[in-house]
Length: 119
Image (cartoon, rainbow, N blue to C red):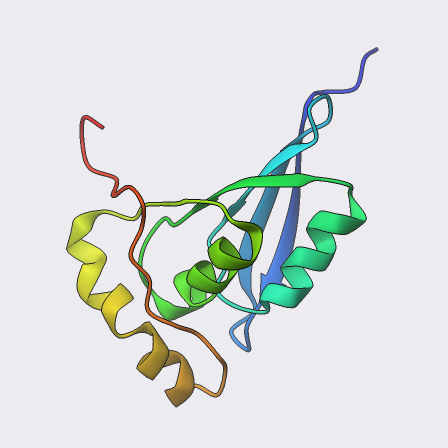
């Protein structure tokens, strides 16, 4: 039976141990990261260890443990951020302060594309 083309790895990050997801295609080796709350160097190492090319960062929502590392990962990999919904902008605007309050690095981010019904 052939190997399924889509693979996933769960990478718990931040002191909250939030589940960041790495998804990739075994044929193209292209990948996406969902909810990179932090530990960007660790995420980049996981991507490299699989020989993947990161194409996008997706945010399901703006809480610090899901979005705190998004801006740094996007910048380091040169990829866009998609999501969350525009209602979470206030959370994204204060990510640096919220992360610092909990003892880890994070920075505010603005997605390249907000997710909203119909787009």
